[in-house]
Image (cartoon, rainbow, N blue to C red; front, side):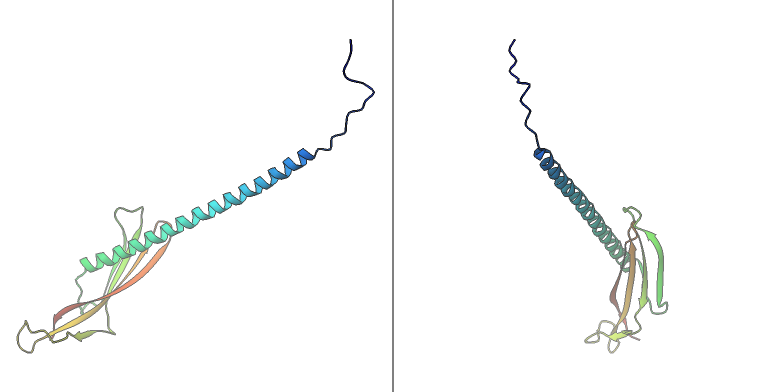
Length: 155
């Protein structure tokens, strides 16, 4: 039987270049995967923080809206404070607000004085400030202040 293999010939020595190149490529791909994962995690956290900030701003605005609708402002009780209230339809977001008579602007005359109450009576504008603080379930808070005035009779 003839054997095609000659036992006196030594096999050529392999150097392992393909193995080294493959390991280097795997290392590069692993580093890229880790960088992508950490970037994705950071992007997710930033998006969540933006959402929580938006939620706290919206609940702050809701507090101002409620204050404007529910509060009957007067100058004899200069400050009305509403305790922390859970906003309906949210995941535990809360707001609180304070309505104050604005002593700096106080009472100003309405242009042209107004004449519907009779001769020489006129109207005044009574200035108020609403400060509202909203808190999202993630401890993100926002505070906003809005000023308005109510027209009433002078005197």
